[in-house]
Length: 455
Ligand SMILES: *Cc1c(COP(=O)(O)O)cnc(C)c1O
Image (tube, rainbow, N blue to C red; front, side):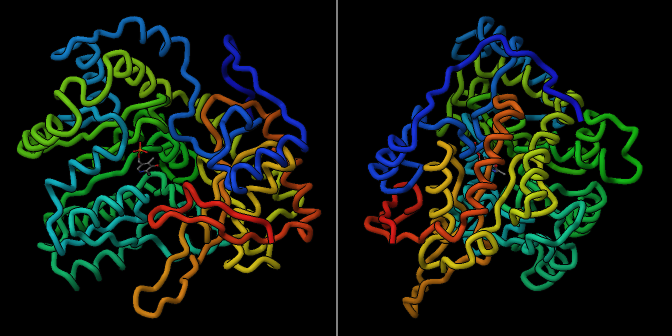
């Protein structure tokens, strides 16, 4: 393991609150940590999206931002970077990942079409539905078992893919997607072998293959470390090989792009590119800025290369694993193997005394904030329980998880020690954590604004 391969030049002071203050803050926020001001959080592990620390070269890049409406120099730099790092012929910038999904699916997906993915991220699934399509998750079964050990737990089940194509017909499948790494399934990687197998099938049926590539570098790093034949290849080479099997990708650059805002849609098909530009102009802006400022494009050009640094990746993936190992050593039930960007806590085993109707995921995030001023993401019944339209019965999700998501280059391992010690303390006193009841909920996407009271 290596220590942080950088030194700190600028710091953002953090406010440290006491328990009494946090009690008050939590109560005012309806026990929903999403409603707490970020300033009142000591260590914020809500998401790794847009939360990276930029490097000195990225900050310097902001100064050479060319804010011309058309043809800014930063676009041409980014174009060169995308060609060299990812290898696709054409691309447009977007302001984050979801507009890239929106534009791709607007063009490709018709009512009644199926879009397979290993696991759709929530915005990709929602954009498929928005176009009248049906998102299908075809990840291997191991992904649904938090304790199943598999080096590439994000793999697509190729038999499930063949079966779906046979069942609905290839003409009903406008594209196949693979999410690298599989965010919704714990940030687990996809192997090169699996990518090749999927490519073979899609080629056979003439279906384009796209990656949802938010964490492409972390995925490539796992291939280098875990897949035979790749140990001596560079991450940059592995990325090129991976991308070489795809016809294009959508990317939220707020993750492995190491920027605070940005996205892209890349492809090899010229005809598709022409259509993409029309939609882009309508939704995001002129194709040489795509909803971003010139300076943002510059920071992204730098970030897309920096993320390939293998010392960085070793430290980055190592830090997530460091936290995971500390928790595991003390018996805290976590999802295994630990993925690339987060440690997931399995609440079904952590808080078995709280039924899903009492929101164990949120009970945990509230307790974690109260105990240590730490914020995590509740990804269980709070976000995913839904009412059956016909019976009115509440259907609870299979997995009840909390995600401790690690921002890139932001926290040190001393912060990770504090997080680990706080979670371990909660685990030792888990019997004292109580369930919650809802006192307010919005009709859609309730987890963002829901308010609770302790039972
Ligand atoms: C974050 C993310 C997205 C959506 O990107 P935004 O930048 O949040 O719009 C899509 N897919 C995956 C896998 C993601 O992690």
